[in-house]
Length: 348
Image 1 (cartoon, rainbow, N blue to C red):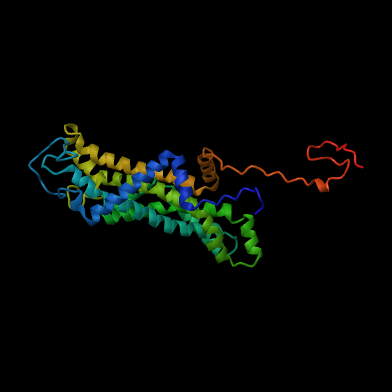
Image 2: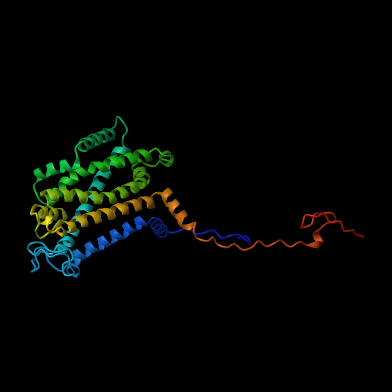
């Protein structure tokens, strides 16, 4: 390295970039913490529920219609059932349903979207398959997803499993439309054409070049979609065709429906405030996390956030320049000196 040159700055690792983007966007950082807390809490409820849940789902206490207190954080109902325990017991079920439906729709709809967007050459079997996929997708998208899911539940029957299947059947077309649009935007970019000109097979181009560049919007949409699925399932549960409450497996939407139908919520509002707040907080957490992931995965936004955080840091001090020594023996009469003045000394 030349003397006086500033050493090159090492590139930041992915964790450092992730932290800087979260630090530059406080709402995304809050969403990340909320999702982490919700996930850890759901894991504890599944593995060791006695650590944070004092009562069972059907256990009755002597305190009936008790207001929120240290003993009953969210109060009790008319039979003495602890609302806090039921809300916490419903967390793994609602969260698992959100991930199951959104994840299955991502895999099914994402795969069909890749095929429909990449193999759309007219006059071929795959081109015909692409057109068929999009026509079926258009048929499903022409119906409101909630209305179609409710109709399917009457066909499949009541319960958690049939309701999940009904929502999944109405959910995958959204991912087909999303992924197909992203594939169409990527498949004709120069690096894809260069790979095709180099003799790379179409399947390898799809998996190595196209899929890798459409994963980012798919991950962001999936994160946001978990909350949307949760609201949809809770709505169906509120209507009364999904989970039943009271029961061994509480569910937030069913809790809202039960306490509203009995009329207890008008006198004891904490009966519906607790499950309603649980739905609101969970959906808000995944919405904030999805916005943060969009900023992290988008290269342009990520660079802008990183520059905004590093611009406030003081620059590294560079060593002062060292002047080159001037040898008197090398100077010739009349030549410019180091100060740019002509030497007028006389020589004998």
